[in-house]
Length: 304
Image (cartoon, rainbow, N blue to C red; front, top):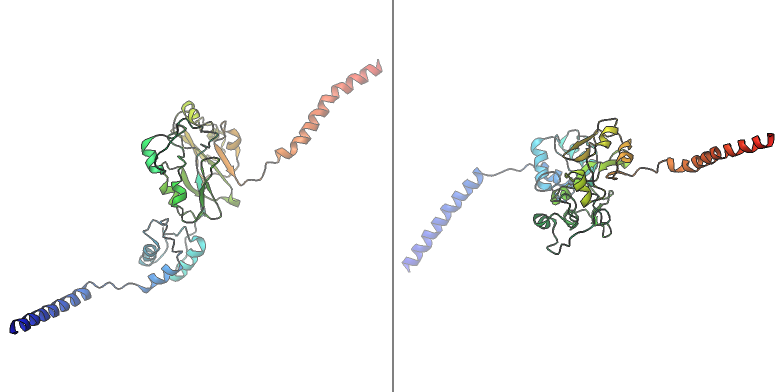
């Protein structure tokens, strides 16, 4: 009986010693968290999309509070409204940033890039990209397996069964960049929404020479450079056989659109050109010009 009580006493003393040690260790390494982090985290959208470059909204809130301002930090999912709320909590001015939207830089629709092979493997773009170039033979085009749509937490991306390409819902897109990271071929880019939501961009990333690019897709950029030559603002560069339009320099004049021989340059959300409305007037002028010689001959015959 004495042995049992001795064992109990030893264990009790040992437990007490460990408890005291753990208490002092906890006090030594105790981390006092700023309550402001909780306040900032509450105004963030809570999507944990990773568009800010942090592990989640909580990590972003910690970064905001630790830095004490918003310089170089932004929440794309929250936009300007959330930026104002965070700035008010931090006591600073939010950094002005142009709103952006995801843009699909590929012209490889089922019509433009006809399938030469059939893929029947795992429905994952990253996996398919490691195996082959693509059904059309373009090693730079969309694989059409929807990794981008699966990655989007805002239901802003969907695969179009007719074209085989992803379609972006501009109203829902928050430019978090999840789709950009999900695409193994980098065909999705975040670009400024532009004035009146209008944008001009090259919907192709094929770096092959013109002839080879056209074999895979009839609407591929062939790197001819006509767009760059016609741009009065120097917004277009041609590198590795493919053109690129700098949205920070582009003035949306659209001269490059009509100059492109393959239709690789897209202009979105623009009103129809007035040229279409003036065609009847031009036709009437041409008809009038054609009738003038006939009238003159008739007058000469009458005088004779």
